[in-house]
Length: 246
Image 1 (cartoon, one colour):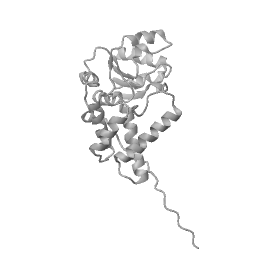
Image 2 (image 1 turned 180 degrees about the horizontal axis):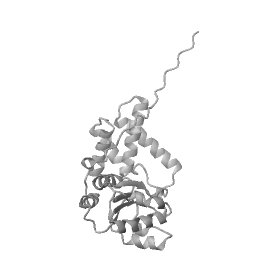
Image 3 (image 1 turned 45 degrees about the horizontal axis):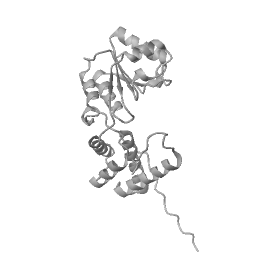
């Protein structure tokens, strides 16, 4: 008797996509309007260095990208700052330093950059989850400088913004979705743009892997799996839930 042929397994290919970070695709809401106003008021800033703060996924990187285009700024992660590269980093007269956090940045390099910006008339935009004044730095003069930096804070998104961002994220991946799916996701994930990104990315991956359309049923499977994993492995105090508690 001939052996039965094994059914082919569908592999998910990492085709990639590009999330649009241009001004036209920035969704304005009460939670982020002050940040957009700050970006659009450049170069009429109250100081050479400004900070944009907010939780992960609140729109800091999108606003930083918009400003980088307007100001011709380079973008560099705080953890990659190099004191010797400071003059080159400010060569265009503008710089974004992303994800500033105590203990995760070269303090001498950041201090040098702030001083140099003042000397050469450059602008620096810092992004961080917490206001720089509340971070723990070893260099006292750096801590003092950062306490004086004006801060614009972004708030977590409201439901209207979460909906608009979900629509944008699906559109970025060229996924056509219906109202039932959007409503289902909105009601079950935490109010976080970072979680919205994660859900859309997982739906895209699983839909491709399983050769299934991106529907409410697929979203239910994914969110239920995530909730089960979180309940099994993450104590409540360890980070935010991906799904809202019922």
